[in-house]
Length: 133
Image (cartoon, rainbow, N blue to C red; front, side, top):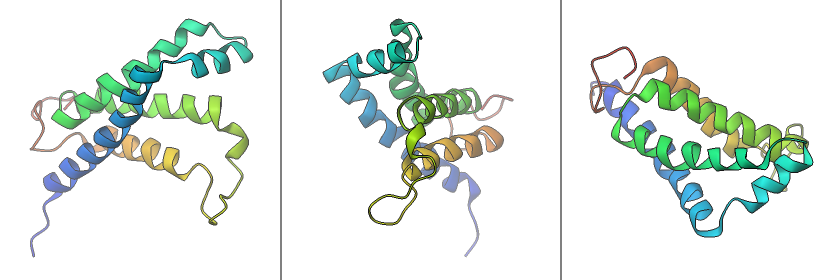
């Protein structure tokens, strides 16, 4: 069987973007009050919480359609790094009750986005022929 890297990149884009979009939709429905509280507790301005809409709605849509994939991926990775440090920093060196890394979902999102930053979106992306595909 011949390998198809572009199909693999499409599946990665659809998976990362699609799964994160559910988190963004939940934030649209329920608001970002919890994130505002976490930011305020760290001495940061609460309005930064609205950046989650970029990282969890706009960027996932860009990944799904493959528009400026590398830019979207680095923003996505930054969003995951902020989530890791803001909401899950106490779990970085912990295991879950099932024996997995407590932050494995965030790590999969983070490193999947880093991989897309280095690879681009592939031939099945909307902006497939420029340096920021």
